[in-house]
Image (cartoon, rainbow over all chains, first blue to last red; front, side, top):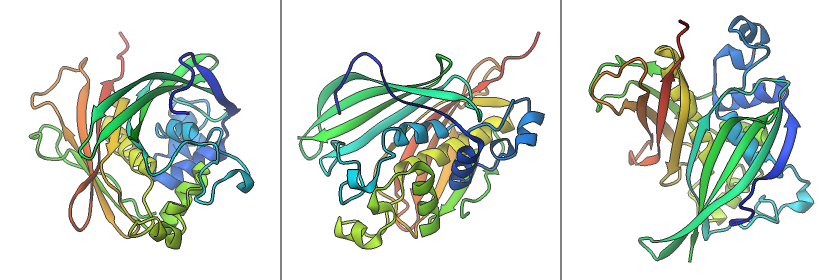
Length: 152
Length: 149
């Protein structure tokens, strides 16, 4: 799915809970207690614990990928994904508009932006650029633009 | 957890001196926790034999984990100066492996002090131990919070 819909399609939506924010924060070493302690979050002026900014990337990575082992390839990647030795990640950028809190219902959309070719050191490269939006109640909390690079 | 606390330096220094650093000694447990918390099942991150059969020297550190650490570092600098992380971008240049120590550093991009309404721009790197090569580089924009009138 390197070049799919140019109009945004919903790739997943779900409610975020305290425990997944806590687990992710511990896994990445985000030590601010607003991520793990509801009292600290409330004292800091939030309704509930706050996801670290990198949580958006985790959402984008996991949505559509929580599948049984029977739907994985031998290397552990979801069978329907067009990845392999000839496709690698390029640049990733995020613009943060606001935080996600426990209890928020997040919708993730994706749209294809463009593809272009460039000469690499070992041959031609094709870049595919896509965007993900992370919305709460229809309002973007983060916008991600990422590229995948295909070696010809 | 083998991620060190962020070490801050004076902000008004040259663009060659990091304003904040932290280090990450990569262990199997760090890689497992990140795979588990994101449900990423790629075996190169937790199955050493498989990773080597794919041509890697050891278990591969997730690129998104390095991106997350750059977020942690930039957020810590933002918090220290009363700003917030407005945007971040990063790209990976080569792989890092289990057993490496990654050193993350954030540098001021502007040489001159910025006005309170202007964003502070950080450029960031993650270097692996051994050959000191930059494995990931990035850029972050810190915005000062709007002040009440």
